[in-house]
Length: 133
Image 1: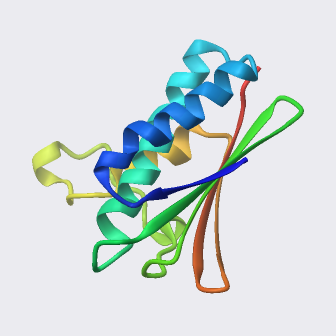
Image 2: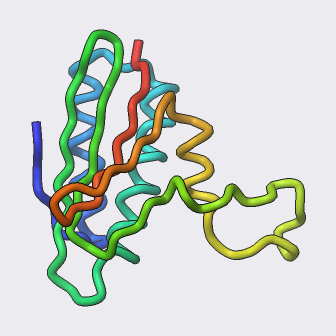
């Protein structure tokens, strides 16, 4: 299943509805769904805010299930950016001593079973995999 959304904050509710409805249909546990939805929001908002220099960008969201695993990918044609190359923030520091940014991707890394990045044919592709049952 793949749906194309505009890369805007306003599209987040539609992205959430798309993902949530398929997770419910697949029998995803509520606590697991909450973790996945937070990861989806973090990834989508990053694309909406940073991938494109001008309005009009799109995000292709694909969702699949293999056994007990959900596989969700977001693909955009924005500025190449591998979130896995960014160093994890030092969460031991106080908020005032920490650099701004990076917590969202760090949270996705820590809560999902797998986070992958590929750059293929001019597209950023971020994939999360998580067991739903």
